[in-house]
Length: 173
Image 1 (cartoon, rainbow, N blue to C red):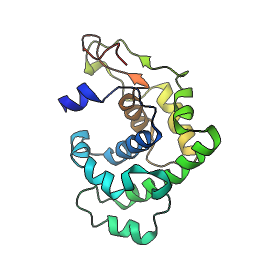
Image 2 (cartoon, one colour):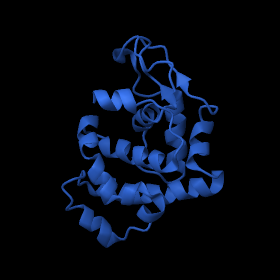
Image 3 (cartoon, one colour):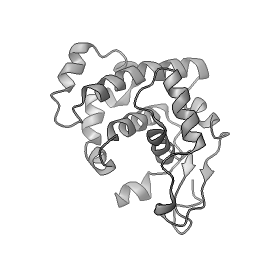
C-alpha cells in the first residue's frame, strides 16, 4: 500500500486506458478492501484484456460466464457484467468528447483539486463533485458508480489531491 500511495495514488491520470482500469477497479472494490483489489490487479488486467474498453465491450455472455470461474478476480456476476456495460458506455463518452479524459477533467475545470486535510480521518466519503460525476455516469449507462465509488476514483486518478498537507505527495502532480 505504501508503494501504491507513493508512486500512483493521487497522480493526475490522462490515459483513457488507465482511467478505465481505475473506474473498473473502484467498482470491483465495493464492499471489499482496496488492498484486496490491488492484490488482484494483474489478474484483472489479464481477465479484462488489459482494460481495453473496445475489447471488453464485445465480451459475450459466454466470456462473462467464464470470468465467474476466474479466482484471480472478484467473482461477482453484477460486477463482471457492469465492467462490460461500463466499457460500452466509456466508448460512447470517448466518441462524444474525444476522450474520457476530457469528459472527466472538465468536471474539475481541467486541473487537480487540492484539499487541505491534515489527516486521512478528515477525508470525506463523497463530495458535490463525486455526486455530480456519479449522477452523470449513471445517466450515461455506467453501473457501480455511486458517489463513494466516484470519490475514490477521483482521488486515485488525481482529479482530487487528498494527500494530507504534511505528506510529501501533497502539492505534487
